[in-house]
Length: 287
Image 1 (cartoon, rainbow, N blue to C red):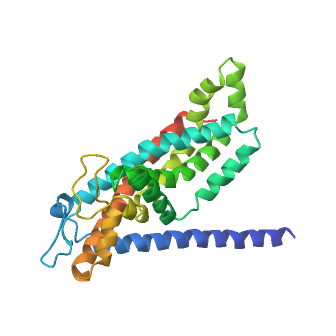
Image 2 (image 1 turned 90 degrees about the horizontal axis):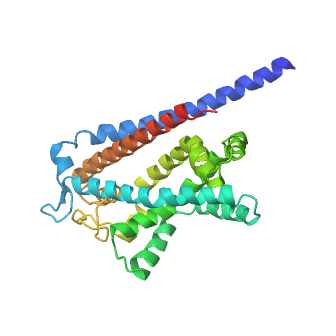
Image 3 (image 1 turned 90 degrees about the vertical axis):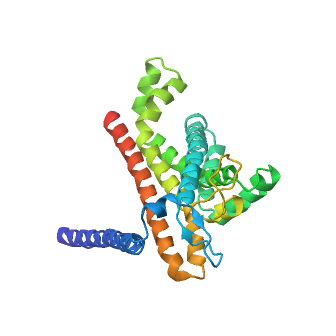
């Protein structure tokens, strides 16, 4: 009987190892494919020039400086808008509304919103921010739309991080005379910071690669570098989409792969910076 259980355990462990290996292999193949096809396109001119029309009028010449700047500005706005709202909203629902029955329906709604397709968020953005609030096709319209799209991810990850903190930390703080708010600020949030940062990493990575919300809310391949949040902008995901849709594939596809490689590097750098911050919190706050 014992040997039978051990044999089953070995089988399942090998299945788990095979699944993990498959994920790593496919991810490596995708990244290597992008590197091989895009590394030859990347040079100083490609990184410092903006897209320009060639003789046929197709925007396949120049570089990706404008899309890089637009993507970084967009991610910065999304970070400023979505993260405070998502984290504070989750703190309110977990710490202040956890005993109310309706909070379960609130979390059910948040979980359902996390699965809404990006094109639906794009329609929401164009209807409310572009037309109803008269923001127009602009950087701020796209940023708020992406912020709403990743808000459920931030809230759910924050909820799980908050609930992972032992109750003894909360009870000890309250027992020493701290208020509920002081306990949350000085104890609960620092101890849950690593989990919250993990959710932020995942949400920003998703926002950085979305194209559908940008198509309807303000991106344009021939837009100048935005000087205001109400200007149109360029973005790497849209640039890649346009290059892969161009008729002159021989010229456009290498530029698309080069832009995709740059986008991967930007996302990896953001993830490494967030992971470094997360590890510092893990070392500082342990239980």
